[in-house]
Length: 599
Image (cartoon, rainbow, N blue to C red):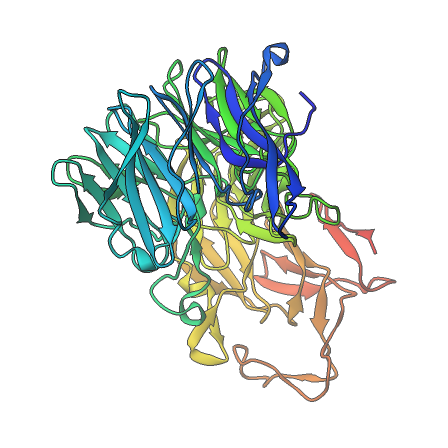
C-alpha cells in the first residue's frame, strides 16, 4: 500500500482481525479566525496484507487539529460499546457506524490518555495546567454518553510522560517518568482512590506498557537519563533508559529489572502475538523490530524495516508476519525533516530465533566495534542516528550481532550489559571476544552467550584534576591469553583474559593519536598511522618513563611516517623505516605489512 496517510488526529487502533483503524482529516483555514479546522474526518480500515479490503467512512463532525506530528490531540480506544475518540470532544463510533456525541470540555487539555475497563467504560486522563484530571466515561442504557469525575492523579504537577494500563478488576496502573518523582500509582475502584507504590527502577517517561499472560506488566524503553551516582564529570556520561526494561510484579507490587534491549526504543509500540507467545516491539525511532518470549534471557532482533515508522501500528498476522501501518518518518534536508508525513502500510516476516537471513543492524550503526575472524564478523555497540527533531540526533545502543559467512546468517546476540557510544571489540580465541568502551569492559562467551564484566579502572588516568579520570586507551587486539591496550600517553596495558588483571607493558617510543593496531599470530604487535608527538617540541625526563611530556611549542603532533613494532623476544618496541608520504588511512595485513588505503 503506497498511499500516504497524513493528518492523523488520533493514534491508530488495532481491530483484532488483522486490520487497523486510522483517523485522519483534511486541514483547512477557519472562516472567522486564524485557527485551522480539521474537516472531512475519515475513519479508514486498513488490512496490511489485503489492501483490496481496505475501506473508509466519512465521519459527521469536525475538530480542531492541534498537533498531528508528535502528540495527537485525540486518544483512540476500543471497547465493547465501540470505538472512542477522546479529546476536547468525546465521540463514540458504534459497531453499526452510528456516531454518538459526548460532552465537550469547557477548557481543552492536552497529553490525553485513555484506558478501556472490563465493564465497557473508559478511563480518561487529561492534563489541565499543572494537574492530570481523571474521568470515567461510559454509554448508558438509553444510548447517552455519561461521565463521572474521579480523583485527580496525585503529585501530577511534576509528572512527565504518563502511561496507564488496565491490570484487571477495574484497577489501573499509572507510571510516570522524569528524574523526579518516579511515581507508580494504582487506582482502586472500590475506594475510588489512588495508591502510591514504589517507583520504577529508572526514570523512564512514556515507556511501552504491555500486560503479560502471567499478570506482570512489562515496561520497555522510553525517555530518560540517569547518572551513575553523581555528576557527569565525576562519573562519566549518563545512562539512557531506552535500552532497558522493567517488570511490575502484581503480587509484590514492586518493579524488577527486565532484559536489556539491543537497540533503543522510544515512541514505540508493544503487541502480544498469542500464536507465538511472543512480544513484539517496534515502530520507534529506528527501523528495527524486536522479539521476546517470556522466560527467555534475551531480547532478539526479529526483523529490520526499510525506513523508520515512529508511532506506527503493529498488526500481528498469521505465519510470523507483522503489518506496519503508517508511522512517522523523517528525512533531513527535506520537507519531512520533522516527520511531517507518514508512509502507508507494509508487511514483513519476523523470527524470534537468534539466527536468520536478515540484514545486519550493525550496518546502520555509527562508531560501533567490528572484528573479523575467518568468515565471521562480530559487531558490537555504537550509536543509531535519527532526524525526528529536525536535526541529527544519536542514541546509544547495546547491539551485539554475529554475521556468519558460511551460512550467510546474522545471529542476534543478547544485548550488551552496558551502553556503548564508541565501542571496540577483539577476538580472543575462537569462541570469546573482548568488548571495550570508554568506561566498561566485558568478555563475551559465544558458546553460552554470556558476558563477564571486567574492571577497567586500571586503564583510566587522571585528567585536569585528581577527581576526574578518563579511559582513552584503545583496544589494539588480543591473542588467546592477553589483550593489548595503548593510550594517547604511549602507555601499553596488558589484560590477562583469565584473571582479568591489568598490568603495564613496555611504553611506545613516542605518543601517538588516532592510530590503528593489530596483534599478529607470531606475537608481534603493530601500531601504525595517526599522528605522533614531534621530537622537536616534546620533552620527557630521560629517567622517568611514566612522566608526561612537556611541550615547548604549539602543535606538537605531526602525521606519522613510521609505525611501531613490538618484538616479543626482546619485549620492547622498535620503529620501522620512514614512509615516503605522511598521513592518510592505513590497514595492517595478517603478515604485518602496513598499507595505505586512503588519503
